Length: 238
Image (tube, rainbow, N blue to C red; front, side, top):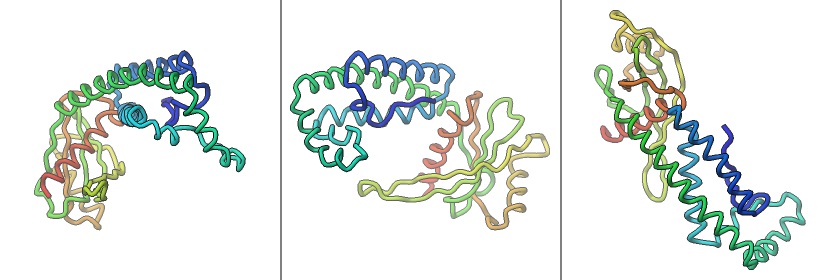
């Protein structure tokens, strides 16, 4: 996956046709990924670049952070001067504005396509606890099953709390454990008991199952959505 660099707008040649070619190649890769119903990492990439571009368009002073930083001491010393000259250059600013005017609708359109796929995949998924839930839900196991439902992918998860913009947010870390075959005898409850016996440090874990009604790419689509579903489920129960 070849993504755009954070400072793609101001890196290298600031030329409309050059940046247009660069963007069209990028959006072609995004389209191909979405056609395969592979959402990540392009969906999060699009969110970052779209928001960043909107901020830059609405506040030209943010262009300072977009320009590549010189490594040499001399370059650092002259950075302010170079930046000032570039901002005062009407031709450069006109070119940057033309690039942004071209890019923003492209990012928005691709982002809307990715969001539509995300919502569809999420609508095909159900999350439910396996057995009784523990009072401590911030650590446990995540089961993921999709058609033909012959196996279950098992992850250990840990939810962490952090503050962002004076708001308490939840982050999640997952670690792949195993892929277990499913059968009449090897139920989700039986798999949970097996994990309890194997990992004594979690004697009464919370276990959640994300069951997908359709088959999707696990790592690039289903797993990221399952993690979001799990975080929302835990937040709702808190």
